[in-house]
Image 1 (cartoon, rainbow, N blue to C red):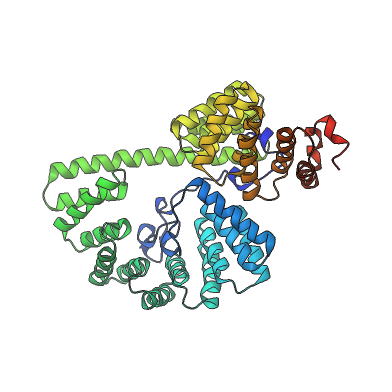
Image 2: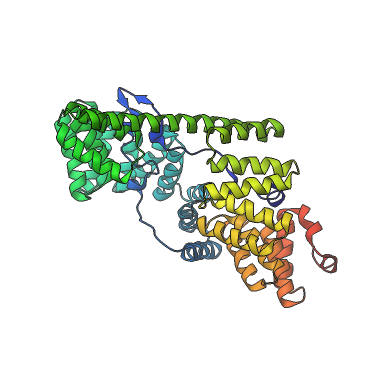
Length: 470
C-alpha cells in the first residue's frame, strides 16, 4: 500500500505474500500425491462451525458489537468473539491477537485453539495446526469441526492411523459429516482399497450432490479402476464448473483415449498442455514477484522494480505485480507511474481491495481527485470490509469533501476493526471537531488517544487545537 498512508499502521492488509492454493503444489506425502491428500478445502471451511453470509455493514456491526462486549467485560469469550468477527472479515493477523488473549484468560477455550488452527493451516504449517487442533479436541471432545480439522492435518502430514481415528470420531458424532467421508476415502485410496474409497466419496455426494472435492476424487478413483465411461461422465461434469483444471483435462484425455476416442483425447491433451504452459508462466511470475517483495523490504527499490517488471512480462494480467510495482514507483517519487500501475492492477482484478485502496489513495494525495478517490475507496471497503486502512483513507477523502457524518462513520469502522489505529483516532477527533465547529471533549479525547498511540502524529493537528491537546 502507499507508504504515505501507512507509516503509522502496519495492519494485516499490507501482507504481501502470495497465497497459492495448496492444490497447486506437487508435494508427495507417504506415497500419496498432494492432490489426493488435499481432499479438504484449503481454507478448512469443512471444519468451520458456521456458514457466514452477510452484508459489509452487518459484518462491521457484529464486530462493533463484539468490541463493545469486550469493553464492558474483557473476558475470554469477548476476546474470542472479536477475533471471530475479524476472521470473518478476512483479517487473520489482527484476529490472532484476540485469540491469544482469549487463551491467556482461559487456556481451555477450545474455539480459540480451533480458530488459531484454521489460520495456521491456511499458512501451510500443518504440524503446528495439528497441535492447535489437538488442544481444541482435548478441551472439547465433542467438537466435531476440531476432530475433522485435526484429521485433515494428520492426513496431510502422512499420519494415517491418527487421521483415521479422528475422522471416524467425527463421523460417530455426526454421520453426515462431508469431511469425515471425504477424508476416509482418501485414506482408503492410499491403502489401495479403491472400492471403499469410492464408496466414501459417493456417501459424501449423497449428502451434498455436486460437492466438487468428492466429485474430483471419485473421478480419479474410477479412472484407477478403469471404469472409463463413468469417469468421462464425471470429468466432463467437473470441467463445466472448472474448465481450467489441468488435472481434470489430463484425466479426461486419458479416459477418452482408453475408450478409443482419439480425436477427443487429442483435444483434451492439447488443452492440458496449454493450461500447463500458462501455469508455468504464472509460477515464474510469482517467483519474480516474491523476490521483488524481498528486495523492497531490503530497500533495494530499483532491483525490486525490475523483479516486478519481469513478473509482468510473464503475466501481463498479474494484478499483484502491477500493484507492487506501483508501490515501488511511489516510494521512488514517480507518482504518475505509480498511478498508472495502480489503475492497471484494478483493471486486472477489480475485486482487489488492496489495489483499489492504493489507486484511491494515489488519486486523493497525488491528483487531488476527491470524487474518483471516494469511488475507488468505497470499492475497496466493499471488496474487503475488514480493511481498516481503506476505511481510514475513505474517511479522510469524505472529510476533504466536507461530508463529515459519512467520514465519521468510516473512521469509527476503522477503529472497530483495529482499536489501536492511531491515525484513525486522530482523524476521528479532527472530523468531530470540524463537524461541531469547535474542539469538543469527544474530539479532544480521540486526538489525545491517537497521540498516545503515535506521538509523531502531532504535526497533523491544526495550530488552533495544539494548546488544548496533550
